[in-house]
Length: 380
Ligand SMILES: Cc1cc2nc3c(=O)[nH]c(=O)nc-3n(C[C@H](O)[C@H](O)[C@H](O)COP(=O)(O)OP(=O)(O)OC[C@H]3O[C@@H](n4cnc5c(N)ncnc54)[C@H](O)[C@@H]3O)c2cc1C
Image 1: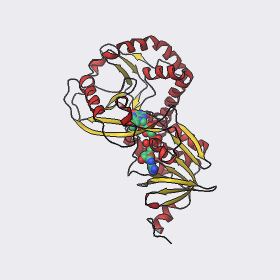
Image 2: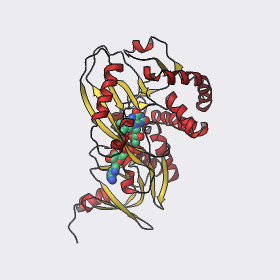
Image 3: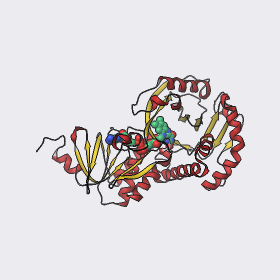
């Protein structure tokens, strides 16, 4: 018998007789585990995560509870037509309702301060062009989302200075947008999983798997071999390591958070440049992120490292637009990895008879993750 990294005791309690294994403990992996356990209470379901905490996007994002900005939706309509563009909006909107229904507002610190799309002087023409299309867009979206009032409103002229912003030529306001605390979202998911007795095992990096007719064998670092009847892969931006042929690749996002700012006027979530830049308040701090379009080649990576060009761009945005007259320092800085592809929609499909993948959440996993997981449970 070969010497093993795993003891008899460890194998007996955690790694034996697994019915469904899930790789990845982000919003999709944990929510899928929860819904699958609700559907199959007797099955042993185990989530394997390589980080000591989830180490992809779910605890490293901006926590926007949003479903699209005016420029983004108009650009999607131009690229893919109304039907596809509105389906994305509808899926995000429904997904956010499902998220809040599953966790409750308090558990994820959901706040409905509304969201804004801002336009700086270089975008005056874009703002004017969007304004002309706003009535049509609102009419369509009210219909698609079954709302009684318009989604987007042109903000009053003095609203940007009330929020402490400078160098703004126009803003759209979306009263349906909110923000969450991404750490508490994962804590709430872990609590739900524990309640229904889903096992979550961290620190286990699955390097590959093989399939037979009855079983899937997962192989991890240290040559631990784990057998499961069914496998769900929810590794999003890292999916290609395990399933090379998929149309999903990593897209890194940079985030900075300021020191607390006394008298901070900013409240809500803000999109800029078709959502490539974004910022929000976290209490009396400001989170800013984005700028990936400035260095797309370097940002197509799973390496979590800073990018000097993007950091300078985000600092400039903070100094010139978001906090023009305030003193601040940067207290937190990190990056996270999204999974993106040619299409903006997620991939939820069997890649082998007993291996299902649910990946490619793009920049909208908070919005769509819960419903993607519900779909996983439906089709498995
Ligand atoms: C900077 C940034 C800001 C964002 N802001 C927002 C936002 O405001 N609103 C919004 O809706 N979305 C946002 N997103 C997107 C959103 O966070 C993601 O779409 C979502 O979290 C994806 O969830 P997931 O469960 O699919 O993947 P992840 O959260 O990435 O989870 C995948 C997990 O798999 C694990 N893993 C990978 N490979 C292996 C392996 N071989 N073995 C074991 N474990 C493995 C990883 O460690 C990771 O924990 C943002 C993303 C980033 C990066």
